[in-house]
Length: 468
Ligand SMILES: Cc1cc2nc3c(=O)[nH]c(=O)nc-3n(C[C@H](O)[C@H](O)[C@H](O)COP(=O)(O)OP(=O)(O)OC[C@H]3O[C@@H](n4cnc5c(N)ncnc54)[C@H](O)[C@@H]3O)c2cc1C
Image 1 (cartoon, protein in one colour):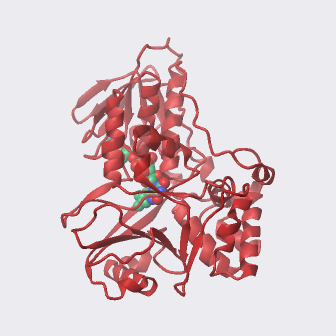
Image 2 (tube, helix red, strand yellow; image 1 turned 60 degrees about the horizontal axis):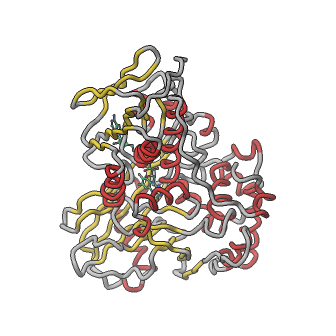
Image 3 (cartoon, protein in one colour; image 1 turned 90 degrees about the vertical axis):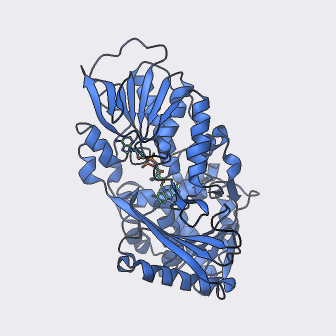
């Protein structure tokens, strides 16, 4: 490994990739006094958390609705600092709609300590018998206590093995884990499922709150976050794909892009793993073969009226998983826009988009009475085949840490070893970890850590310390 140089006063850092990981890294590096340039290949920032122009004249529409949870402390802190936290709607009630169309409003209480705060959420699930609700609660506790080799089983097999009733698996674990992890419960590890149960539900009374963007992601990240970064002296170049990271004497010395060459004191490589493997094949070799992605599909629907009378709903036991009503001005005046999100959507209805739209519209008509007379004006199906990292058993052993063998080259991205699933929170955490690793490699101090939600005492006894 090359020796550490004496710290440079304001090192010039190239952040390759303008997704949330790169933008979070840029923020942390600017905090530490670096001169930062973000180089993003696409025209817009935000990476996978992106919007497209509605060709029907309705403005920006998110390729897929994104949601953060209360446990996403790093993402929420970035939103607060960059001034868009007020554009995240705070839903404390989780709405479930069961196969018979019955609605359950499930709200954790702030009056009881964790994990007892979940009692009203659990008991609010009207689609389960009392026995099923108790078994579900017991399954959640059992998951928090899963240890060692158990954590490397697949969630579906493990849930069946510990005796969770099939209805509880199909109508709770499947929709909740698949939407939180973006992957089928037949494939995700118990470790990943446990992360959702402990950090996303049991750990803290605010953990399961939803924070739902009410402005397009293109505005939040492409304008608000980017504008805030520019105001802090970060240069942001879009349409600037990096083709090479030049190295000399074991250190990164420059990045090469279509517009030229930028000499630098350090690089944070914040691109998806396949792009990272192309730019640094010696650093990201195996990940290319050993990491897998999971697809997510969003079905965009424009009707002649708005009929979704809930802020969001989890449709259990159906093809449609989550439905979101638009808060932004998507669609022309007088129209009603809504979006249905389906995680782990590989092979969905054989890839037949028309059949998918028909099925989803049919399901909406079954659960929202107002939809029955509504006319569908337009639809669009958007599938991202590599939406998220598939968090299968063994994946944590393959996810690389931020620090690399090149002391002034660090990795970031939701696929790196953050301990979090592939989410906005995971991306922001990875950006901070990448910045910290790079600063350490340059002999500089990292910005102070962002605190996690503090697990309640009972949860610490049940699941162990603050993390893990
Ligand atoms: C359909 C879908 C739904 C999702 N839903 C949610 C959700 O509800 N909640 C949640 O928390 N997360 C969700 N996610 C996950 C979340 O979007 C990602 O985890 C996060 O945005 C990843 O950020 P990133 O910066 O790590 O990667 P990316 O967003 O992929 O950013 C990497 C960037 O690098 C750029 N790049 C690549 N190569 C180069 C190069 N050579 N030079 C310069 N730039 C380059 C890319 O253009 C891209 O902008 C969803 C993702 C998808 C796709």
